[in-house]
Image 1 (cartoon, rainbow over the protein chains, first blue to last red):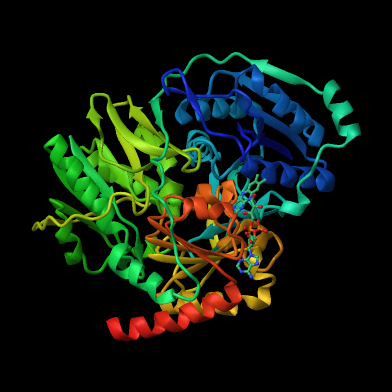
Image 2 (cartoon, helix red, strand yellow):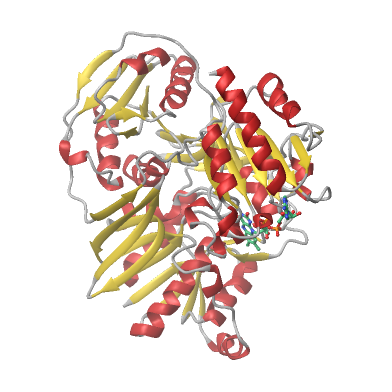
Length: 248
Length: 320
Ligand SMILES: Cc1cc2nc3c(=O)[nH]c(=O)nc-3n(C[C@H](O)[C@H](O)[C@H](O)COP(=O)(O)OP(=O)(O)OC[C@H]3O[C@@H](n4cnc5c(N)ncnc54)[C@H](O)[C@@H]3O)c2cc1C
């Protein structure tokens, strides 16, 4: 089985969110970039397929050279090969096209992406790839098993779960549940050493036109002062929620 | 030019957030001086939608569509869009709509922006505001393709009444094959979901253990609320993963969010900050959540929550 894991590089969840250049760009100053958490669950799931059936696992990212350290980390976790499509990722349609074009030429049985990236939160790339490649797609995927070319995938829905079956190839949008937090693989010394010898290939794409642009960022409005209520005076809370906030 | 709104259904009825997306679609159609068409799949009675101003309602009734399938549904919306010369497709922020939207974008060769919170500030280029960095910021995004798709963040726009008498059209799409087959569906029928709820009662590690969730469920019951939890609570297996909210869990944008025994870590706040009113109950006056909330109580959940529940019950009995 050949697996491609799509890795988005995102600011660490504790990062301060600031902007530069007249608020048109995210300020990367002092920000540490990490594997998008939703993708990290998928990468570990891919490692289990590798351990069990000897699957070949490639990781791919669309981005600039600064993302190489995150790709190296994916190699240290156990991926065999990393690919970076050298383009500033600004438009999901373009990102999905680049990945789909690469995947088409290299026929993967399974593509694992994340439900969404935690920076732009688009929930777009995996669904677009599925349509571009005309393969099955399961998003919000919280469980995946593969047996003789047939996948059984669990999708989280509002108020429950559904179980879906399909033939490979398949692309998923993964999230926690695919593996548990405590299962996440952390690179060890041997992995880090081996990663240095593994291929990280940079591909120059033939440009695809963008369909969206991001122009300007805004910070949320300052929160108004909190109203503190004495724990002996819960009637006041109810009164405020009813008469002031009008939410009950 | 024409606007199409697709609404989700549940048990053959429009989902609650339909009012919001149709209202948005109507305002947008007014801005563009064009018609608003609403597409429904297996909805028996659509009169309640007339309140929000559709010019046309396309009704599909087809038993083979009783189980949601993103690929089939995306293709149907695409067929409707072609047949009725649609330029703008509006979807809600529900999991099914967000599942099919990117597929539709490729079919339609359209730029797609998700998590939109307002009407376009400009039509040339078409520019809308969306949330980004998990609600830690907003940004203006433009769609530069001819065709446009947006999904509206739940509870961000609200609903506006604008009654109309729409033309009802029976639409018979061609239903394509999908490679996916539903094996089983496991869903609580009457349970209020986090996405649908007006009130969410959420609890964290301060509750000490799963055996203590009774007071949380009772409070939620009184308020007709959904229950949620912080990430460690679901990681520890105290509550199901489906209740995990925050940056890496579900987003919450409800009217009232009550956080009990949750410290208010940045990743938690990111996911819940678009809720309108936040109440915090925590023993530690220094808990960071107090900086992000509207109302706060410093106190022990095990004392405050049962008392609050009793008082709310009395209040509800009086006011209903
Ligand atoms: C990559 C990453 C992603 C993450 N994503 C998320 C996410 O999506 N969602 C999320 O929630 N977290 C997330 N986290 C975890 C986050 O950083 C915090 O660890 C977590 O939110 C803390 O959960 P908590 O508030 O329940 O627990 P704690 O931080 O342990 O807080 C418990 C609180 O309960 C209070 N308390 C104790 N006893 C009582 C009592 N009797 N009555 C009232 N209050 C009491 C304490 O004062 C304390 O404030 C993420 C972390 C990382 C690194």
